[in-house]
Image 1 (cartoon, one colour):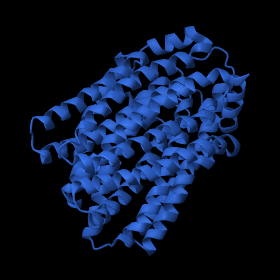
Image 2 (image 1 turned 180 degrees about the horizontal axis):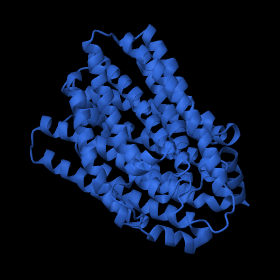
Image 3 (image 1 turned 45 degrees about the horizontal axis):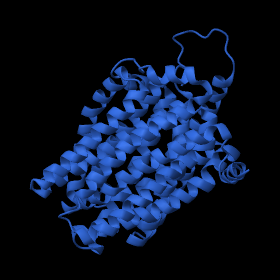
Image 4 (image 1 turned 135 degrees about the vertical axis):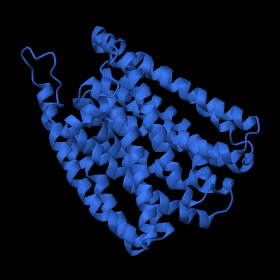
Length: 447
């Protein structure tokens, strides 16, 4: 009786079925631990990033892009050879070992400015890879229909973790001081190991209804060629559209980030103060994100459709940059960035991940990873240099904001195209087929 009451209570918030609860709970905890571990160290990364001044940031973004170009083929080789069951532990434990290495270097007295620059680049690579692996895992074990119902609440786990992480960092940063902040790296490494266990439990519960098929899928390597991700994107207008949407997303993010770092530097002094300020900003954003994920995202996608969720962020971006063009200030930047980031984490990211559920496994891991990492960081680097170039031409913050407004309009059009294609491809996958050709790749050939 009590279990039935709890289930009914949960179903008032989330459209989850009884047989899905185990997988959803473990996926929720997985995302919670992953982002709490990352957000423990994100404010530290941001404080190190601004320590070198705004002019250093384009170089850091470019270095991140170069490292990403080198890392993606290595990841592609892993995906080709490893099964899903082995891929998640290998990736997470590799980055956990890196965190412990940074801690050791800091403890041995390696100069902090040198560690800071490398750590900024490494953290930017690490975050994208582990989150991309998590979502590749989720879109592989959940269907398109399930994703529209459940990805919002799973994303709320990430938002909850992103609340806890910066709260811990904000609470300890000024007490510990810069000397002992690197102990946060050890705690972050521990959360990555816990993520491995959660992924295994989520996979077990997700495959409980068809255990033999689930085991075959999780134990079978994805296969394919090392650079298949690029080939798939070039051959598919659908994947190319996702890549273009990602490029526009990261351009908006970078423009806002560069404006914020300049204004924050004027508002607070000292690395510890910068770390605390970034941490409290992250906390406020993620509280809003968690609320949206729990109470809005699933309803938005199931009742109004995927298109409604995909257009939220482009519309907010257009309105936000229009406001910044009129009144560029720290308060307006904080509000615009806060609303955009909360909407991105709670609405845009789950909706974007649903787009991958209708694709073959190779696209889910390789093309998706290329878009989530190389395209994302390439957008960071190119937009950072574009921002610097616009400043050198004499454009003010208001002028740069005006440049971003038509880009938001383009993004809106791409989002609508992707939503239409996903609906068609999901319907095709749900229809029974008589003897499909072995080489057929659903959704790719039809773009």
